[in-house]
Every structure is written in C-alpha cells, then in structure tokens.
Amino acid sequence: DAEITQSPRHKITETGRQVTLACHQTWNHNNMFWYRQDLGHGLRLIHYSYGVQDTNKGEVSDGYSVSRSNTEDLPLTLESAASSQTSVYFCASSTGLAQRGDTQYFGPGTRLTVL
Amino acid sequence: ILNVEQSPQSLHVQEGDSTNFTCSFPSSNFYALHWYRWETAKSPEALFVMTLNGDEKKKGRISATLNTKEGYSYLYIKGSQPEDSATYLCAFSQGAQKLVFGQGTRLTINP
Image (tube, rainbow over all chains, first blue to last red; front, top):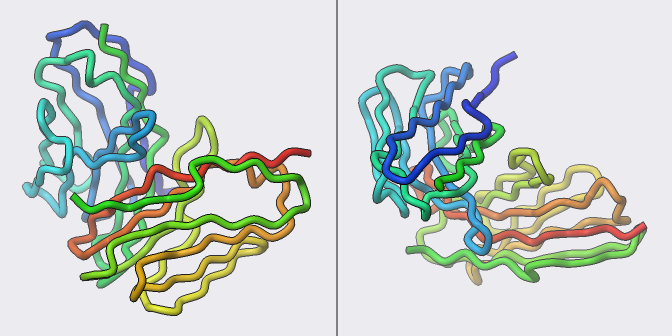
C-alpha cells in the first residue's frame, strides 16, 4: 500500500547541531509539506514543494531548509538546532492535481527535542 | 497571515448527545475548506473537503456545512460515541494548494 513515512520518530539533539528529518511518500504525489505542531498554535507550515527542484517558504521557515531532488522525498534540515525548535514535526503530501480542495495526507510525525 | 479560528477550543460531551463546533475563516478569495480528525498519538486524517458555498458533507454520524459568504463552517456529530474523542481541525485554502490550519477543537466524550 502507498504510504507516507517519517524518520526518525523521536530525536533528541543538542543546541547548535544540524539535524535532518526524513519524509518519504510512495503515492507519487507532486506536493509535499512540512508542518510543526506546538501547543496553542496548531499546525504551522514550515516549507513546501510543488515538485522536483521546487521549494517554497512557509509561515515559520527561519532556521529550516528543504530540498526536493526526487518525487518521493522532502527532507527537512535544521541548520543549527535551537531550543525553540523543540516540537512535533509532520510531513504531508497531496496530488497537486485538484483545482480546488487538494486533500493532504499526513505522516506519523517526528518528535524532536533540542537540549 | 490568514486567520482561521475554531471554537470552542475544547468541549466535553456526554455519550449519546449531539454536538457541533465552528470554524471561521476569511470570506475573500475562497478556494476550499477542509476538516480533519486528529486522534492523540496519530496523524491528522481527512474528513471532508468543501469547495462551494452551501456545501454539505456527511460521513456516518458526522456532517459539515459551509457558508463562504460569511466565512464559517460547522461540524456536527450526532449521537456522540467514545471513539469520536479527538481534536477536529479545520483548514482554509485561498489557492496555491496551501492550507492554513485552525488551532482545533478538542472533543472529549464522557461515557
């Protein structure tokens, strides 16, 4: 079955380290998104991609980067982890084919703690 | 930054009772309104996507309505069951296939 996976599921790192969170989808979806979920804020968009070699900044992109070298993967990199980046991170994908109302499908999440 | 508001933030309902909650969004440049169900320790799952003013969607005991002119959507749950306990998220789109999520309504069904 097609799916969207994230790894690792849990990560503890130290301030200043570079961290990469993986997202892999097997639906052949064009669009991929990264969100962070914090108490009181709901889901906030970090970066997104509409296809290979396309990346765009979301609402809370400072300190994060992504690259899209193939359809299946959109890794999220924290260049120099900060305690404020402790959060749960969700990856999502959508077909990119709907004119309106393109449903996003979410991965299981990665809980990141920055000490 | 678009503002999507959900109310109430949390709700406790007795098993068997019906309930509803609200999502408010900008009424201009509307493309779509999504509802997601999010159980603890799981990932959000799509319930409905609505694109036209007056849309009504139904899945079992859960239904949703949409008013794009005044910028609100209601989610209704009829005859609440313990398995309905979850956070219900709405998300608004003004195009470009990006979604802006509300903070969610956390629903707890008391047996």
